[in-house]
Every structure is written in structure tokens, then in C-alpha cells.
Amino acid sequence: MAKKTIRDIQVKGKKVLVRVDFNVPLKNGEISDENRIVQALPTIEYILTQGGKAIVFSHLGRVKDESDKASNSLAVVAKRLSELLNKEVTFVPETRGKVLEDAINKLKDGEILMFENTRFEDLNGKKESKNDPELGKYWASLGDVFVNDAFGTAHRDAASNVGIAANIKDTVAGFLLEKEINFIGGTLENPERPFVAILGGAKVSDKIEVIKNLLKVADKVLIGGGMAYTFFKAQGYEIGNSLLEADKVDLAKELLELANGKIVLGEDVITAKAFDPESEKNVRNVTGIPADEMGMDIGPRTIALFESFIATAKTVVWNGPLGVFEFPRFAEGTRSIAQAITEIKDQATTIIGGGDSAAAVIQFGLADGFTHISTGGGASLEYLEGKLLPGIECVDNK
Ligand code: ADP
Ligand code: MG
Figure 1 (tube, rainbow, N blue to C red):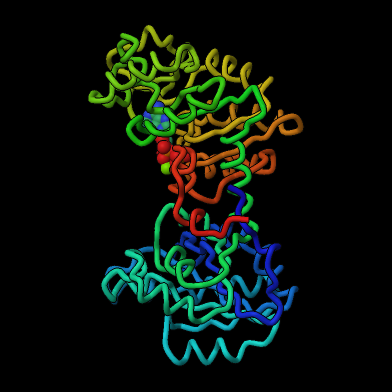
Figure 2 (cartoon, protein in one colour):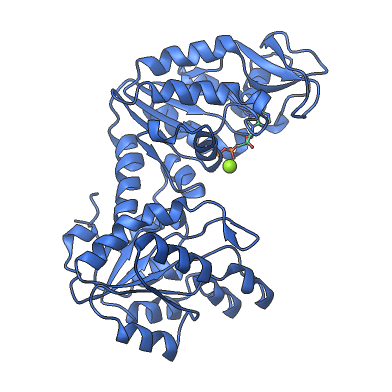
């Protein structure tokens, strides 16, 4: 179902509540990755140039007791937002009350304020995270319309998304949420073929539903990473000390049967004697992994095989690194596959959904070669599982 976006409403002169996902990583009080702020700029800039009054808010980190407040204040994010917009952003260090309400009433058309971490309300009985009806109603009362642009939180029903939407007349998607819906949702619904899915990461158990869902819609499902070893085991191979989920071997067998040839596991792997960045690397056939070695990456023949499927693809969806890419010595598979995907950019839609896979591609400096890198970790995973996300469902249909 097509969702209303910010283009479908008038914002001029209106108090526009804007839920963004500014849950950025902080190191020693500094923002270490501002991608989520940058990705939200088009929506905020649009509201301001259209003459709306933007009331921006987000959660940040986890707030379990009073002592978590200082390290999870959005003040530092408001400051950075102001620099990026090149415009004053009034920061209100409250989540409710007279100070906030007065600040909102003082806003002129085209001005912006940001209020404090929505999860400060969790100290008050998990009101934000458990979608307390009073809180959603209160926040809704502060604005005229609601723009949800927080894809990273779309898999949770919180007071600051679903709760507000239930209590306000218009709820529309911002440009980032729209982009995620079009690229992930749209691609799964109606992919150009051949559609190649690439799955990796640590555990089968994290990705069961994603595998099942992608088997339904993709033409090939290439599997690497730690989870491949449970599949190798299911095929009857010995996998040495590689990552194994023994209780998922039967499931892996079932998936292989269900896949009817769609799953491609590769032919060789890179192994090491220890889970260590300095450990020597060996190339092994999947049929010959020594008992004292563990699989750390996909091997060269597997890279070539995966590349041959990617070369002709019209759609690629990738979730999960293909090896222990955090260790440069074992990053070759992930890097080569990322590179191969960037080479088909002109002919295909290429999407990354997954926190670590996105981080890997950004780290390799290859991010520009992809059509879309999802800003959601958990949210993109659940979206790829084929689930309905509450933060999308609560947006008005066209
Ligand atoms: P994403 O966040 O992209 O969904 P995951 O969280 O599922 O990805 O998995 C990422 C982790 O998987 C990385 O930390 C990586 O080191 C690990 N990984 C990949 N291949 C292996 C392997 N062969 N053995 C152990 N861990 C692996
Ligand atoms: Mg991850």
C-alpha cells in the first residue's frame, strides 16, 4: 500500500512534529558516525523551506536510570544538526512541560527546535519504549501534523512513532522513510530479475526468517560468513572449529531442500588456526577443512562464483558480511563482493540492509557504488524478513 509522504501535505505555518532516528554512536561524548543525521537533512530542510515550524525529536541509546541521562543527551546532536543545516537549532532539554510548550509556541515559520531524548520518558515507567498512550497523546498535542522519518526505529512501536500517529490527523513519511520503503519494500515486492540475495554474518539463527523470505522472492541466495558453516555441516562436511550452531543443522537441511538449488554456498573457504587478526590464512576446499582450523572468510573460487551471479543481476540485496571483515586479513571476501556489486551499479538496483554489512562497505570507501544503504540495522533485518513494521504501518495510506 502506497504511503503518504511529506509532499502530500501542506506544512506552511504548521507545527510539524518530526520523528527522526538520531540514535548515533557517541565516543567520549563525540559523534563518531553522523550518517543518520545527514540522511535526515532533506526532510528537515524541506519543512523549513516550505515555511513549517519543525519540532524534531529522537531517542538516543538506552536510559535505564538517572545516571544514563548525561551520556545520552541529544544536546551534542542538536549542535551538529545546527552546523549541518547552517541554521540555529533551539535545543530544549525537556521531553514535556511548560518550557517545551513555550518554546514551540515561540517558533516562527521556517524555524526549528529539537527536544531531549524521547527515552528520558522511560525513567517514568518505560513510557516511550512501551508506547504509553498518555505520552503519545501528549506529544501529538504539541503539533499539527506528524512526519515520521525514523526508519531505524520503525520495527518498534514506541510512543514517539505509533503513539503520536494514533492521536493526530495526518501522519506522513519523510524522505528517508520513503526511500527505505521504496528500495527495500518496493524491491521485495517487485524486483527486476535476476534477483540475487547475498547473506552472511555470524549466525543462522539471526537470519532464519530472512533466508526463508528471500528464498521466496530471489532467484539465487548466496550464503557466506559464519552461518555458512552450519550449512556445510548440514551437507555432511567436517568444519573443524568453524562457527557452528549445532541445533540449527536440521533447519539448514530443510532450508537447502526448500531452496531447490537456489542456495549457493561456494566451494572454498579461508581458514585460520585461531580467531586472531594475525593468524596465518589457508585456502581450503569446503570438503577438506582440517579439524584444528576455523573458517574466517569465503575463498577465491567462491568469490569468483559469487561474482559470476552478481555480474548479470538486475537486483542485489545484501545482508551480512561474508567473513570476519574486522580483521583486514579476512576482509577479502567481503571487499571483493562489495567491489563486484559496485561494478553493476548502472544496470542494477543494489541494496545493503544490515548494520555490519553497511559498516564494512563504508569502511572500504565503496558506499557511493550502491543504490541504497539502509540506515536501519534491526529495522532493515525485520523488513527483509517480510514483516510489517509498525513505524511504517502507522503512516497514512495514500
Ligand atoms: P549485519 O549486521 O550486517 O546483519 P551480522 O550482525 O549478522 O551482520 O554479522 C556480522 C558479524 O559476522 C561480523 O562481526 C563478522 O565478523 C561476523 N562473521 C562473518 N563471517 C564470520 C565467520 N566466518 N566466523 C565468525 N564470524 C563471522
Ligand atoms: Mg550486526
